[in-house]
Length: 91
Image 1 (tube, rainbow, N blue to C red):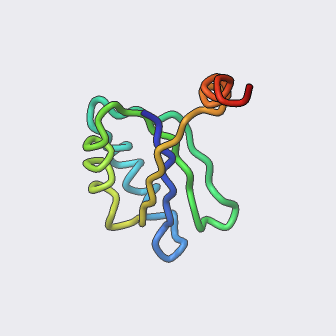
Image 2 (cartoon, one colour):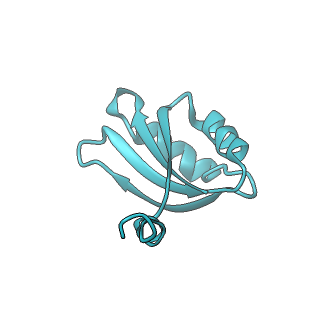
Image 3 (spheres, helix red, strand yellow):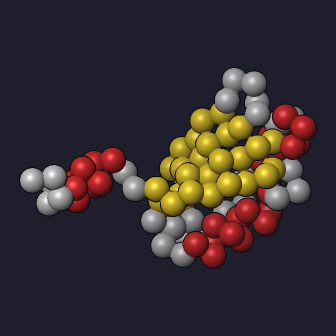
């Protein structure tokens, strides 16, 4: 399963996040994979695409960062997969 994780840096300050990342890495449990990320130019938000078959692993990862970041998690499906699925419905 893919999850789009929308992060809001507390006080729009990414420095504490990058400091912890430099010291401890992503702190992801085994079975959770980082796919990619994008950061808004004003440091207000970061979008991370994560993959796991066990959503509890995502929750465990969030606990490591929840003191510095507010999270919104959205399950997502790649467009190509949805396009293929929709072929049966748009005839």
